[in-house]
Image (cartoon, rainbow, N blue to C red):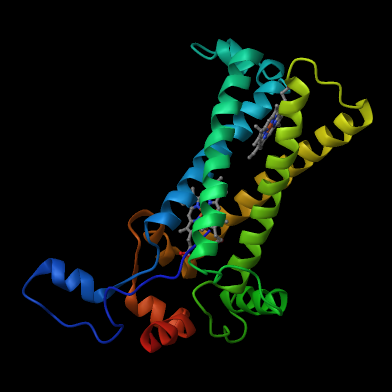
Length: 241
Ligand code: HEM
Ligand code: HEM
């Protein structure tokens, strides 16, 4: 989901300039380009809408009387929630295809999990809880690479099973009952796992050590000093380029 950040500055000591914009540049590094931020937010927005409209179809909002609240009657109208589900599915499909094509063509694979990521994640979490030294990191921490794979695999399963459900809804379709039953169980299981993955992803920012990454997903820049300390292997790669 992420690309190699092209540095707009070489990491080094902060230089005081009379121009505030120039100071801003010297103190930050470019971490995420447009493609990464577009994919992140297109996936995040579509996934949240898909979860809510999917739960509406179960129909949870009728069971828990959410549809009796003012202006929320439509939340248990199957035709409305299905139309919303299909619209968000189109956005997710576009973002997924764009992500795979663009980042494969640019050969940007820094977020793909590597051997030893489970052990490294354990050491990072242990260090964040105050015990031991944190290992040096590349652009992404080992636990971020694992989070990417986990969320990505569930989204891929949701896309595959979702399109089988679309086929089922087409006029004249005659798919076997057992296949549709298994498909629905997988669609629902991936929904639960995705919710857990996103909760875990957001919980990561409860740790102070991870918070400096937050601005980068909005405007692309990260504090250069933070990157030098925590992602020193990434900074070395940038300097070598
Ligand atoms: C359904 C909602 C979301 C999904 C599916 C999602 C998914 C992801 C994934 C797979 C990554 C890459 C792996 C990682 O860094 O852990 C990522 C990165 C990131 N996400 Fe999200 N995300 C969601 C919502 C959010 C929200 C609401 C925020 C905060 C406002 C956020 C902030 C970030 C940041 C800051 C990064 C980049 C970290 C870095 O620079 O290394 N995400 N997201
Ligand atoms: C983040 C991704 C997604 C989530 C969380 C999600 C969640 C859900 C949930 C909870 C349901 C209701 C239970 C069920 O019938 O299994 C549902 C139904 C459905 N979903 Fe998804 N879904 C996602 C993506 C997709 C995609 C990409 C498609 C394909 C276009 C899709 C198509 C459908 C269809 C056709 C139904 C059934 C409507 C019916 O009963 O006829 N979903 N989804």
